[in-house]
Image (cartoon, rainbow, N blue to C red):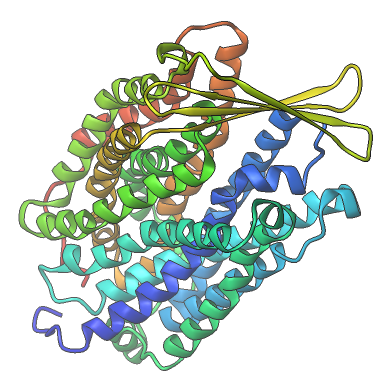
Length: 497
């Protein structure tokens, strides 16, 4: 592979990246719409419990990713990279489309959340097989000494998929009225995915098998039992565990803190208008995404270890100060209300409930809309939406961008790092498991665990309750940093490729 030219590699990158990006889009559209989904597929009498249930269902897709890694990783090491991630693409696309077709809780009761859970599990299995195949496929086409640069293009797909999911949601909201989006428009982003999957399938269908795997298959050196050779061999198992606890575990929590937790925090803790959050997050992702390539390229020059470890360290040290500034930026208790407000209006509904809307405006341009829904004499639901001014919006965009920068440092080099740790015949299986345990378990559980910590701290009356959710990523990344610094070798290994 040292003599491999880059001729044709852009075709490989394009085909692999497009399919992987669509899978990430499919996977994250659920998280991007978590606030809306919680009102559709779960009982509405307890909004907090419904939202936590939605996050738990979202997390379930992450939890099963390691099982997808084992199942599809084994197939990929036996029959080939190409055919395996063709299957994962179709499974993901079909599951996403069907989530958009499920009737609401009001229509079919508890069958609604059950069907959503089943489809989320299928999504998780599909993604568990997709990433390892795509990263391995690209790495096995890339020239020696440039694995970090070329595989970093695959690393951009997760963020690009999230970015596109946000843009599709914003576009749908701009076309439809708020009532239409809430009624049925939220389903459109799920339906859109089926067209993208079809295009990607046609592109992938014409791809050739990885030259390294094709050579191994021709020579009869592929594995007949990848699971046993990956995890039954003590020497290889040592590297699997090192990859998990010394790299992917910390990378996973940094990734989800910088992108998903930041989004959830602004929407549910800071109560910022959902569309404004999607917009500023989209801008931060757009500006930050090229740095995946930068740090992937740099890892070819200086080694993967120190870039990933430095990213974890500055994230650990910076998270609490960053989130304190974020919270203070829109804290209305520190703003001056315009005396002429609030404006109050009441709407009586046919079912006997009523909604009181209170609008307040502040001297810096911030406005707050509070809705109180009176279901009966005892039950009241309250929701608050803050429309931030331009200055606060750009402040938050910058703070989210800084977190995305941490993400690019730990995530940009990780594909090449994992691919280089394992031999060709068991690479798909061996690298997929630690990646998806680190990201699917440790990273995927972050939104639900951190949101729970914040809710518990708020109930307990802590003044800085909004910072408690950060202890989870700080502790996990801290443990990973120590293990990685002590046991990971900074030299990029190319003997397997």
